[in-house]
Image (tube, rainbow, N blue to C red; front, side, top):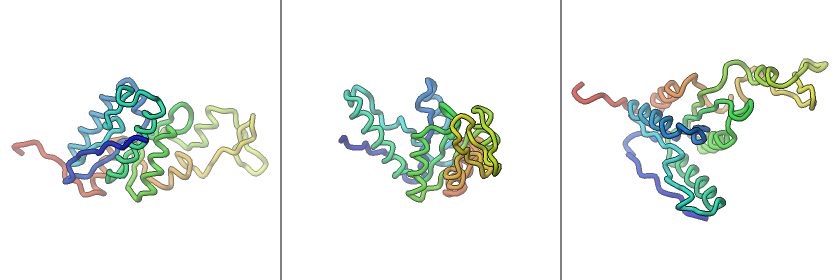
Length: 192
């Protein structure tokens, strides 16, 4: 196992871990720069999963690189004061599984977590629009092919996510809520 890199940061402002599948997109650098800029405007420091500066050059074996990424991200969550999580549907009807792990880990540590990017409507409605479903004799929605029940409860996500964190429509609104919760001081332009 490799050692986790230490994240050097300004301890005078809240640190926010930026969870989400954004690491998989070609424009990930732009996404994280924009989120970090929004954090800075609110008097916070954004920590992106990519801040660990790991690469195949530093860890040539895929297993070692995977372990180092895991350890680095877990350490950043531990060092953070809160988490925002992009919970967009990713490769299906659910959020990215790695992001879901990070959310659960942060919740278990007692950190405030705000999700954003959740599609409108209920999870059950989205599943029923994508997969053939029908109601059974007691009114539960089930996948037609497998008979598996589709979780209801009128929640926008699986209830374990929807009930354990706060949801916001956008990343900026998620950051605004965290800034207020953590008592961050908005940065004013010089001369104001």
